[in-house]
Image (cartoon, rainbow, N blue to C red; front, top):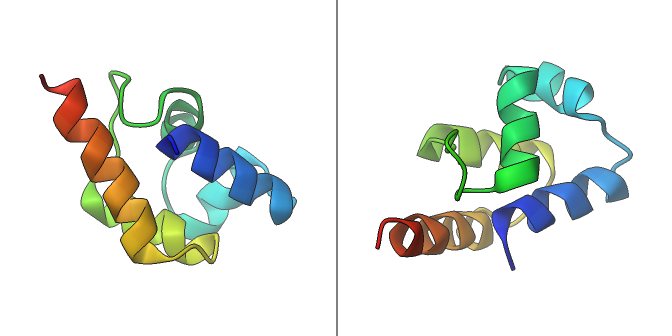
Amino acid sequence: MHLAELLADAMRRHHLSAEALAYATGIRTPRIRAFIEDGTEGPVRPTPKEVTELATALALPLHEVLKVSQERCTTAGR
């Protein structure tokens, strides 16, 4: 699964907007929107700290979110 899909699905389940997630995590809203649209393949990529904060706020298993974000980062760099 793509990071963007994972975040969008979790946000729908929790009925959270990008603004609400930004408020909960301290990550700026435009960055969160970029993660939702592009995942790790766009010009704005999440840091490991941001991935951890998003996973915590969305009650997602951290190891799964880190795995998805790392897989995409390594394939995007090829």
